[in-house]
Length: 551
View 1 (tube, one colour):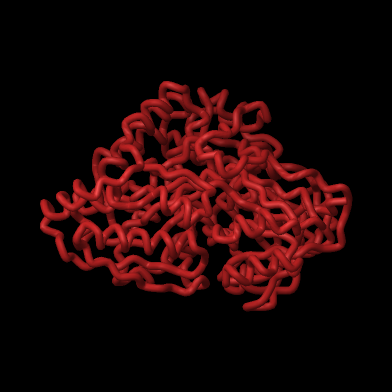
View 2: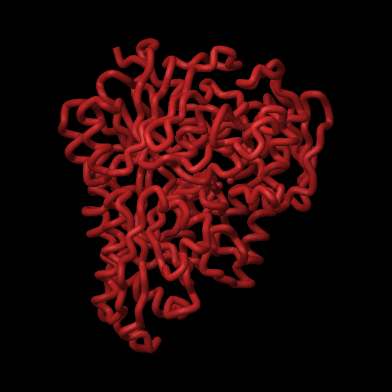
């Protein structure tokens, strides 16, 4: 994600943070005491954010997990969306690791050091075995990171390597990354799919089939088992794992594209749990007595992605009018099941955890309130000469958060004089909106829930830089680009976020996307199992290894 689609429904790999100085940066990356995101931001009148679920009481033979779509591939270079990362995080590991508390700790690298602003040195763990039986060394790391930078691979994470001038082996278990210029974001992305290490021999043996059949030649607590295309995918516990042994012997992921089918599977016990719970099912699951619905930190915002600025949406007055006309509170109630909060911020408040109170205040106090003003919106449409203009918004049956936001956009447009039609896209094809320009032909907007892959606002804000992966509409602002470059180069979090506050203000004014709501992570566990994290860390943390018997 992260720069590429870490949104999918987005929430693509969407993708960052640093330390006060080069030295402090490397220290903070591994300190468990470094602050995670504050438990604030969303409206807690409907739900309470949980730090986690109860620890497992013991081992379990297997459990079944519901996912809303089948991954097109499990190649880590293309792990930009929920289905891929939910599975891959348990099979493939990265140099660093995102914890359930959304802080960083060592992963396959036992230590990371930052001897100067443009150098990162990763010292690797000894004796780590790949699923193909080989032992990890520096050559595998160099090969794995180089695949992200190879233009022939069209990697979803390529943008996160734009400042990398070279990755070299500097010892049998040491790799050095040289940067073209200081980059506060790069070291943080090494905890996402961008930093995954796979066996060079295993990847080369698989060739073009890597990620779609056979093994993945990674190091995680589970290895890829049977993949029944269109139905399910199994993970088998890897008994040669270097870390803590997984509590479950097997995990079965079932591909249930219909929201009702996923809910029914959870209620019947056909599936033991799942993330990305259909919002229309929150109340039903909560009172079912069959298990527990948890909410945790999501670092997620729901937005309207503007994909075409060559037509009416090229006039900022039309974008501002749609923003003013949107019924955000109504969407939170109906589309998010009451689990969220209306916002005009593209970033979550939790993403600003590394900044001072004054910086957070400057980032949010200048934003308009999330209230409707139909009269002002109509006036802007008339002023822009856009009355009666035709626009198309994509929708999908993935869940009511997508379908009802598309409907809300259509309703807002109708009220202010626009003619907006809906185009329905199948759940399995929705991810193509992020990877295939042809899939976006004739589409002006689509609902996008963006999750940040690091606890830094720049993860999202960099998407509006000229040429950025998710900048589908070709938005370009020279001053904005300059501020992104300035922020990226600053390692001290508070100084960096002062610049990011200005980026947030500029994005709020120009609206390259229209922000709608903050949204927590939801996870349902039936009475058989427990141990899964409640935060969005499950995208890059081997969460399934913690799941075991509830009693």
